[in-house]
Image (tube, rainbow, N blue to C red; front, side, top):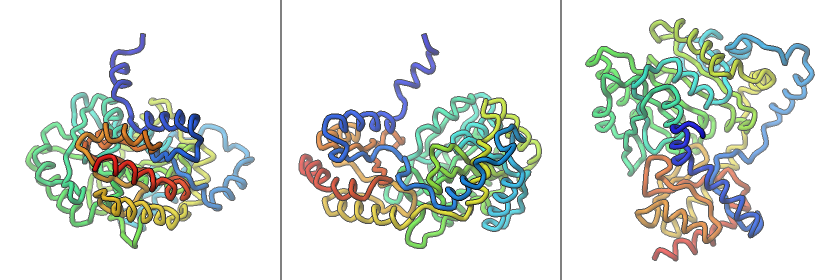
Length: 391
């Protein structure tokens, strides 16, 4: 038999994957064109031309497929460091950056490096539920902080009550998955004040882990505040899965603020854990590719058009929803209290949605609109029938 712990985790594992698999079944019955699968945040757009050109340039480069430093190629890390320094004003070098196997790999490397058994990691609900498993992987405990549901910005009173002597880190996902909300600079500054006061009260250091794979997917001229410039004990986690459409390439990085006390020791720990967790190093070819394509982006206007079409039509139909400022998700309120039951009802109309309970925020559901525009347009009659069913 398998591990009892894994057996328990399987029973509460991702609703996202469960609905994605349900979609495959419906597609086999009704045809893919008649199924509206909004379950998985799987980028639909192809990578930008800069990525493809870099792939062609490097594919047969001699020595590229050998081992390198566990932290990755120094010249790529230096490019990332300089880009972050320009954005934040915080001095960084290649030594502050570790290339990783995507953001998920990066999060596991960081949590392995900093957590002692029983230490706590606070996350702002709604949140990416895999955080629970990543923290648990390394002996920690996830502490969800409920939001202000009128804006889905963090609730500061709740945060203040949850921070304890055992709090080791706070994960900030900005823009947020699943809401698409971008936490404002004002909100982040108030979080900083709460964290600073609690560090003084307990005599501890609380790391700010900024999980930001959607930072390049923003709309309407909104700026994503630089968490690196706002917090001293910042660890950036990023990937190119969304910004360059490279989800299957598994390439990302960790960047550590030079303001962290004993930063050299932390960086050594990150490189060590990158190796001993079995990643060894990030994919060599794609390290070179992202180094060439740091300023490239997927078509943001395409995502914006889908956001606007869905938001305008769903609110017309009667759904309540905070309009997302970034990422490629909508997080409307379900038309009944039981979001799981609501999502199951949506299957009757070939709509694949994910319940908000899967993100620690019951009563809502997530729509991932990284799908063809045709799917978005054709889904509206199904949403209308779904809403009619609950009148």
